[in-house]
Image 1 (cartoon, rainbow, N blue to C red):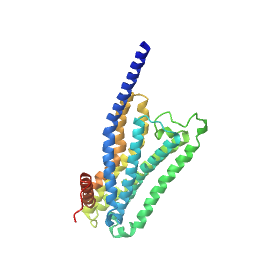
Image 2 (cartoon, one colour):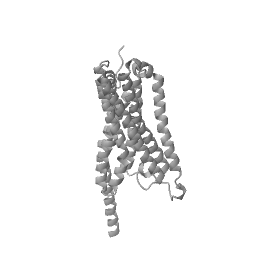
Image 3 (cartoon, helix red, strand yellow):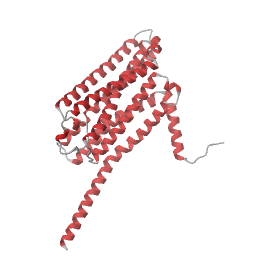
Image 4 (cartoon, one colour):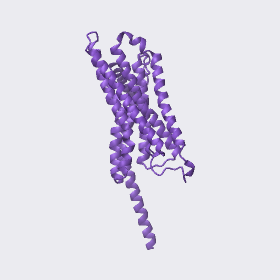
Length: 324
């Protein structure tokens, strides 16, 4: 009888511990997941807006913005998935984790390269206004987008080749010992060196490109033949591009910070710090594009508000009949 009571008490204790863990998970994940879902919805409406009118589909800067938002939306969704998997302590196999992290890296690298293309477009618009329509054509814009995706895909291909050199057959199981992250897939010294070198290369080259275009616009703004209002607007846009670039590239240190924190903090502290870092380094930079262009651009703002209000009214009255 005593053994039965002890077993019941142990079962109740395990149940309480399990419920407490679920409650902690909900309390830490809900404040992150709900805003992420809201921004994913807004980004989806923004993407629909940029394809709804001919002026958006045939203007280079709007096409580049669509590519940027598409990459940011995909990266936000994949990052949220990896965040929930790590918060739930779900362990994946190396191949599944590899696919998720490679797709996340691919979309993460599209953003800074697209920002460089958008900065160059603004530079040409201000410094060479008479040749802007001849240089910034839809064909050249499509070519720039193809180059961006091809360059990023080549980097992912190289990482996959380096990853294949690891002797997975020597492992007892392909199941990972910890949560899935890019840092956990640096299974060789060469892979670690390559990732570090590429991150430095991307950061330096993108920063130099945006800075150079900003300086070019500043010099052009001092010229009497340049429209001061247009130059000032382009200068502010390039400053925002620089901020976006810095925030986008800051996400590369997220995994390294989490791994360092795991070694010195307890589980509750890790969850709190992970949530803060995720919002600051992953979620916020991906929401910035929608906030900037959805508010600053009058054409986008009016169309975006029309689509958002239409969606809200439709969800509030799903059975409303159309007027005859």
